[in-house]
Image (cartoon, rainbow, N blue to C red):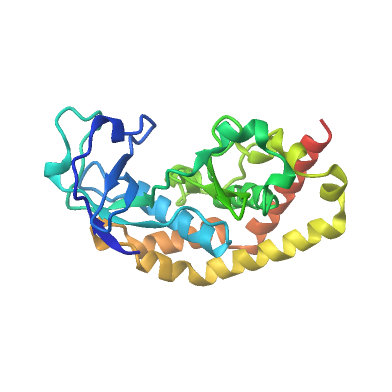
Length: 270
């Protein structure tokens, strides 16, 4: 990750009224970032989850928005901003803002298989969320942006603070419920032919491909955690051990796959 600094005042309209009240920040590389920040001087667990999940998504070739570290200067927060406390000494997790991106909700009426360059990424994201135990991507809150590349739509997954069961990677893992999964979305039937998703050969190809992603993430997880900024105060050895036990066994991958197939069949049979 690169590190940048705010260079302009942050106005009330730059604050997103969602759970963590992220802010849009203009930085010294002349780019805007949507920044999540640490509100206190304890470990920045939310930022660590955002960073780790986004890094794993890149290994899965699921392309979240580019992310960097952003320092916000105290003098750039205008009085009366609708945010809580912020630790200025701790770099924010910043996702590069692109005004051309649109939320999936706004594109539902246009969403068909032919409009996407890689519609299968919807299934891959659904499996990834089960695998990483992301509790906050479902039909009520897609957390997916739509980008246009070569006149085709591309999914851009965002907001991963609820990964690892919202920071419970030190406890026993369990799979998401059907309602917590993208597989409960009616978009499954709009993006894919039922016969394609029932074909055992096609499914086996997905399983084998995704297993390789699982293995590669396991191989690279230690380096990803080591690259977290020291200002986040993350106990890195502990986090590595917890994540290893939480989600990097073959047994967990198999449980996730079985859950994926179960939920997929529920939707296809409705």
